[in-house]
Length: 331
Ligand SMILES: NC(=O)c1ccc[n+]([C@@H]2O[C@H](COP(=O)([O-])OP(=O)(O)OC[C@H]3O[C@@H](n4cnc5c(N)ncnc54)[C@H](OP(=O)(O)O)[C@@H]3O)[C@@H](O)[C@H]2O)c1
Image (cartoon, rainbow, N blue to C red):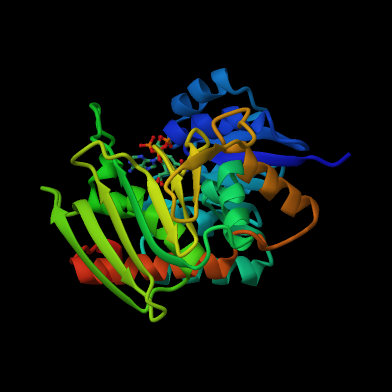
């Protein structure tokens, strides 16, 4: 039976979690890793044994024994590394934020279509059991029409602080790193906002330490979203409808959150159960990509190219309002 052969580009923090979760994925195997320096890749391969250990990203991208590459570098490099892999006919699962801006996202997608190769943004949340259950409740009309969403994501980075969190060249700032999750949630449930307002607190490096966002919809729906590196917020989400509400508690974007459902006007709720992830939760997106590749798909039906463009376009609109710019915006 055919298996999909995975490679990992960049041997950092998230790459380790992803590699660990690949063992739960059916018909998938990790065959190669690539780092800027051989020693980094070798250290990684001690914990996650592979057939091929590459001392450059290019060598990994050119390896004919690899079907799909998971890009796990800081967002400032996603455009460059995705193009490198696609041009070498490798399918790509690219970490969030997909790119720095909409222009880069469009170029990445255009290349994937030109090469007729699979490309998907690694927005793992959309594949998680709690998230799918929440969507089912909403589609079934359990909370009626959504009137408002309040979602936040905040943590104080602890030393040693990764340079990618603040460095503008790496795509630093709270919005692209974590504000993206409340934005993704709102786009997924309410679609493209008709108007946006946003403000931010600058970091010494010139990126945003925190960002406050409001979405306005012609329907009357409103969303209030927040990201910060300055306090340990609840990282929760409230979705209010005219017939009930849903609350996702701490770390609403991950598999350890709690899903609370409140029906009607009486504010007594119930906590709903859902399947527990075997790993960190990345196994669901990895299984989806593996299944897509086994079916020879070039685009995911769950996270479409249009979804990634809408997310990057919305982040661009927020950045214009808040005054957040990156060197990549000038190219
Ligand atoms: N989905 C999620 O839940 C989740 C969670 C955390 C992070 N992420 C995303 O994953 C990406 C990586 O995050 P991370 O926390 O894993 O980052 P990280 O550990 O700081 O860095 C990842 C790797 O990027 C490579 N890299 C290449 N050029 C670099 C440069 N100039 N400076 C620093 N690193 C460089 C390094 O790989 P080598 O030295 O091995 O070549 C490094 O190990 C980000 O885009 C982030 O948003 C996603």
